[in-house]
Image (cartoon, rainbow, N blue to C red; front, side):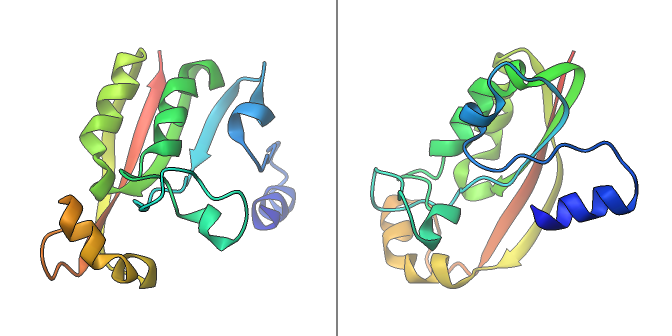
Length: 152
C-alpha cells in the first residue's frame, strides 16, 4: 500500500489507495480501476482467519471465499467503463470467475497467465489438495491468472 501511494505521488497521479475489507471500505464509492490480489489458496478450514499471516492467502475449502465476494461486488465498485483486474490461482477455477463476472453484467476474460513453482503454503497442503482433487499427484507448478472485467 505504501509503495502504491509513493509511486502515485512521485508521478503526480491522482490515485486513491484503500486497504482493508473492500466491501466496507468502498461503500457508495465507484472507481475507474480496481486492482485485486485476494486470498485464493484453498484451505482446510471453512472459516477465514481473523488475524495472522494466513489472512493473506487462506480462502476457504475451494479458494473462492473472497474471489466470489469480489465478483458479486464488482459492478457496484466500477464506474461505467471502469476495469477490475484480479489475480488468482487457476486452482480456484478461473472460468468460474469469468462466468460470475459476466453473469453480473461485466465483460470479462482471462488476459494473462503464468506458471510458477509451488510455494511453501501449497507444498504444506499437498496431500489435502490432492485428496480434494484440486491438484494432481506430485504437481509442482501453479497457474496464476489475471482476469480483466470491464463495466459497460
